[in-house]
Image 1 (cartoon, rainbow, N blue to C red):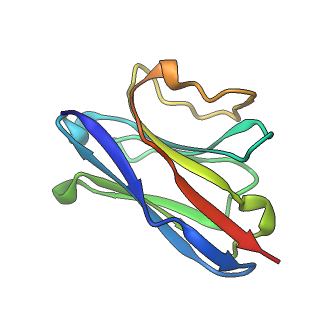
Image 2 (cartoon, rainbow, N blue to C red):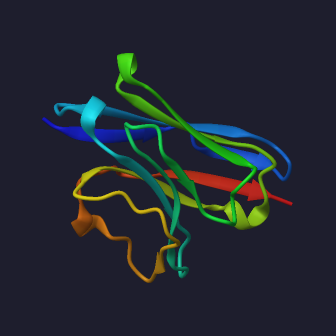
Image 3 (cartoon, rainbow, N blue to C red):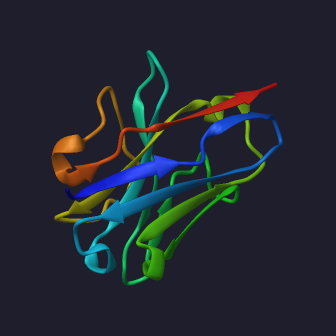
Length: 130
């Protein structure tokens, strides 16, 4: 079964750090672009970061300088290192993989663009308390 599975979410205090993982299986991870989105209940879906296998990375302005995306092709895993977390980072974080193109512009909408990706994870909750 081809899928992506997120892990690493949790609860931290403001200023803390978390590292999210997205592990792919059943498809060619090393040629797939990857993306992280987040959405809190009642809030819009926001593109957080994208990662292309050619090394290009994109970050939303809201996380630039605090979040870092990286990958380990040997493990078929992409990571999102989140530092200096703020309460407004609280959301469910979703990993997405394998789209026709890689977003490198801001994206905020009422619904996440699942239709653009072949693989969409179940999400992992990140809660940041003040």
